Image (cartoon, rainbow, N blue to C red):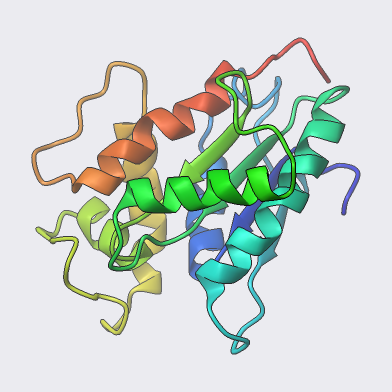
Length: 196
């Protein structure tokens, strides 16, 4: 792990990771500990491609990353962002699974003061990318095989940044799992800026 990393991104795949990076590059300096996030500030941990269920892999890695976040957050202002698809489940079910993973590892569950962000797209990240790009989508359809999805990431991340600003109100087309992610990313701005 890079000792310079200020954000750990635990994600299912590269698409999740790129979306989060593009979002983080827009986060105001005061929320990022005094300076804008840059590439070296972010350590991405993604599931190995082609080795089984990516969401299951994220859940299995979650306790270790939480433990590392807590160890480092005693001295540094850092954050952990977890991106895991709900797939055909409910977002609350994924949240319970993450909580259970911590309990099974005998770790304390996420507290209000933790800068641990849970981003849980339903059905998958592609739903959010299309929604944030102005498309009317639902959370039942699988959009993952649509063409040119990666081209949507910069615009989608910029829109997510705008929708997540304090007092911003997402438009009516915002799907529920994306609306639930907005208070999650606001945890980044609640972090203790007194730490370096």
